[in-house]
Length: 355
Image 1 (tube, rainbow, N blue to C red):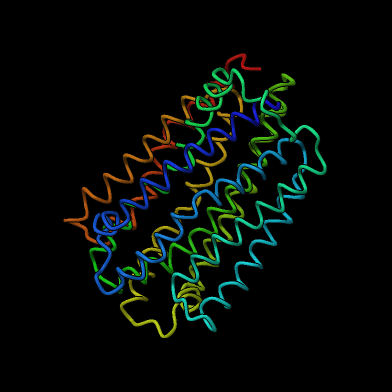
Image 2: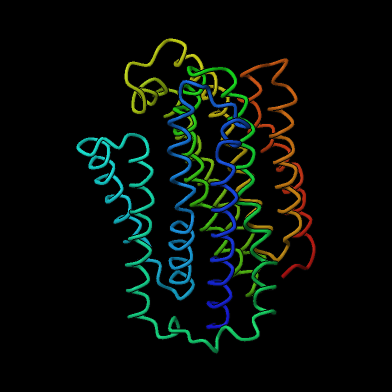
C-alpha cells in the first residue's frame, strides 16, 4: 500500500508540473484556438492562467481525498469539500469586492480554497492512518507500481475527460458566434451539469454494487440491481428534465443580470433539446458502469471513443450548416452512439457465465 501511495505521489507531481508548464505557456494560444470573443478575451485569459497555475492544488486535493476513500473514510473528504466550497465563496467576495481583483480574484479564490482543503485533509489523514506515513525506502523499485497505476489510470482518466474534451470543441463553436451565444450557452450548460452530477452519483452506487456481486458470483443480484438503478436514475432524470424546462429562464437569471432576448434564445435552444435526452445519459451511465464493474474495460473505453468522435464530428462537422444547433445535438448523438455499443455488450455478458 505504501508503494502505491509513493507511486501515486510521483505520478501526481510529474503530471502536475508537466500540465502546468504546458498549459501556462500556451495560455494565449488556447484563447485563440477556443475563438473567445475579443471583448472578453482578457478576462478569460486572467481566469484561465490562474486556474492552470493552480493545477497542482487540484491534483493534491484529489490525491489525498481518494487515498482516504480507499482506506474506507469517505466522510473526511466530504467535510473538507464542504469546507473548500464555503471558503471559496468567502474568498470570492473578499477578493472581488474589497480587493477589486476582478475575475482573477475568483480564480485565486478557487485555487487557494482547494490548496488549504488538501493541506488540512493531509494533516488529518496522517494523524488517523499510519499507512500514509511513507519513507524514502517506499520510493525504491517503483517501476511495477508506476506501470500498474498508469495502465488503470489512463483508461479511467480518459473516460472522465471525454465530456470535457468534447465540450472544448462545442465551446469553440459557441465562442465563434459572439458574446450573446457564449453567455446563453454558459448559463444553460451550468444547469445541464446538475443532471450530470446526479448521474455520476448513481454511477458510484451501481459500480460498488455490481463489483461486489460480481466478486461474489451472484449474477441474479447484478441483474436486479442494474434494473432498480435504471428505474431510479431515469426517474431522477425525468424530474431534472421537467424542472429545467419549466425553470429555464430563472436558471439563466441566476448566472446573468438583465439577460437579453438573444441570450434567452441561445439558452432555450440548448436546454429544450438536451434536457429531454437525459434518459440517454442515464442509460449510458448505468450500463457503462455495470460493464466496467464486471471486468470489461475495453467496451467502456471504446464507447468513450465513440462518444468523443461523435461529439466533435457533430459540432465541428455540422456547424457550418446547422450553426448553433450542431452544439445542441452533439451530446445527445454522442450518448446514443455510446449506448448502441454498451447496452448489447451488457446483455451479452449477462447471458454468458460471467460470474
